[in-house]
Image 1 (cartoon, rainbow, N blue to C red):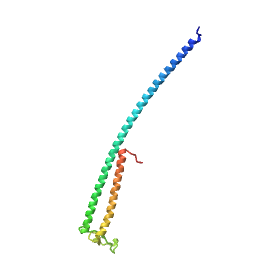
Image 2: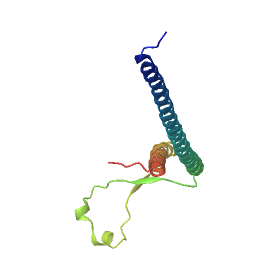
Image 3: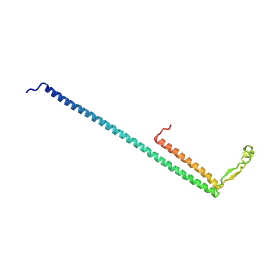
Image 4: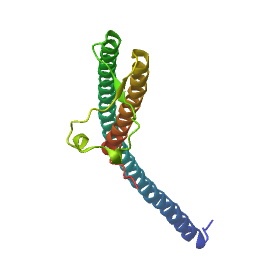
Length: 170
């Protein structure tokens, strides 16, 4: 039996199509492999940059934390010192070693003061405070001083964090 003339051509076309399809698959696989390598390289680079940035931030965070702890310790020392001084002052007031007084307004107007007062020879009338009143006034002043120290420590902590992380204010 004889083979029709078109069969070898169809077989060649079919082999060519299969070969082309296989070559296209190889090229596609090669392109996919290149893309996968580039993606892996990019992911590794990004992971390295992320790890470096994280390490920098953690170092800054530790430094800021240490500075804040140091500032808190300083505040505690300042508060303890102030309390010791206040307690010593109150003990001196109670024992009579320190006496507190306030000026008492006289019946004279400041404008009618004589010239000896201007020369520093005038003695103003003063009233001595009892120890309980002196202690109460000292407690009020001490509370204000403590609040001022705490606010200054808060401002210092804010500035430490701002400077550590290079934060722009405004």
